[in-house]
Amino acid sequence: MKRLIEQELLKCKNNPDKMPLVMFGARQVGKTHTIFNFGKQHFDNVLVFNFEGNKNLHEIFELDIDDSHRIIRDLEKLSLKTITKNTLIFFDEIQECAKALSSLKYFSEKAQNEFNIIAAGSLLGVAVNRENYSFPVGKVNRLVMYPMNFAEFLLAKEQEELLKVIKESFDKDTALPQSIHAKALDLYEMYLVVGGMPKAVLEYIQKQDFDFVRIKQQEIMSDYHNDMIKYASKTEAIKIRDVYRSIPSQLAKENKRFQYNLINSHARAVSYEIGLSWLIEAGLVCRCNKVTRGEIPLKYYEDFLSYKVYSNDVGLLNCQSGIPVGRILTGDFGGGAKGAMSENYVANQLVSNGFELNYWESSNTAELDFVVQIGDDVVPIETKSNLSTKSKSLNIFREKYNIEKSIRVSAKNFGFVSGIKSVPLYAVWCIKC
Image (cartoon, rainbow, N blue to C red):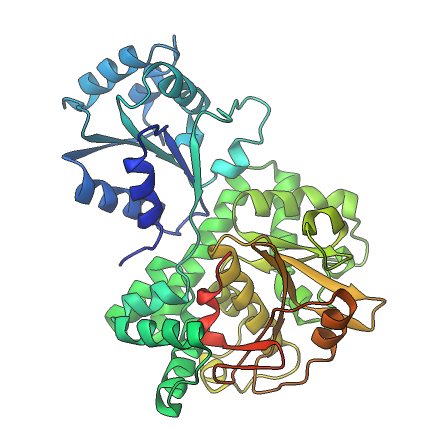
């Protein structure tokens, strides 16, 4: 399955001043497969060195990690392969070896452009925040990989032509023919069930059975829970698990601001913040901070005490929530669930395009789902799960901050009226930084 991040990998490869590349991302988002597939396409050969349980590999990094050429010689001996300038060296699960991560600094300083190195790890974000880890800041390039966005989902379903017409309609603000619009909405609802985890997507494409998809999603979440136990103390693991389990109920509220008392009535932020931080570092959730003003730069106006939390994948969220597949496909699930799922979906698409998430509210009388910065503009994004065009909060925000560009995401077709760009739910991936 094609992943759009391969374009960024190619840019790094062709950079004349390239440094080792470190790829972050949650478990099961497809890092290993994507890097290996990229290496097969663009290098003479790929050497994979997986640090998980590999004692001989760890020993190579026990001494003089500043001697990059010595490390290369030892890697050649271990692999029985010659490493050339057109060999991709892939360090997988590098979080298992702190010294290997630190050694990337010296590959950048002493052997720049001599070797092609990509490192990745499922819990790398958690690992680099440990006290015994020295991350080579400024000496490596960084990429973050997310679950497959809706565009990648369509590519996996061989819908390239549909992607093209969606992008063209987005650029021109022209409505799609109703039959194509309806087809795209059906695929969007399918994506709500399947989500973007590659194994879940592949399971659906191969078997066309959502029951198998749910089984695969449950396996992925089981792996997540095992990681919580493996990479945290027993007390921390319980709190991490409790925070993760609370996400569906957090998002189902009318006020989606994260509240620790929903975990249990006695929960206090000081006790559970470490659990939330772990989930963010592991890439299992993303955080959306409140902004108090709709002005450039948004970072000046972030309120870190008020925030929303979204699952990293809407398919996993739906599985975790236990909403019957048939109800999702027909849109027949009410209360706050439908809006929560649409909002989480939009958050996932924006994050995969590199946006930092913010929201805005005014004295509890108006709340705007997302506020992003695109170039020199603050752009408010209102999310609707149906055909509704009521935009009280959006209008208040636009008037208050003299906003020229704004976006309404809904089930409506493309269009542009009174300064509001109408973007169908299936086209959020078109919104770029």
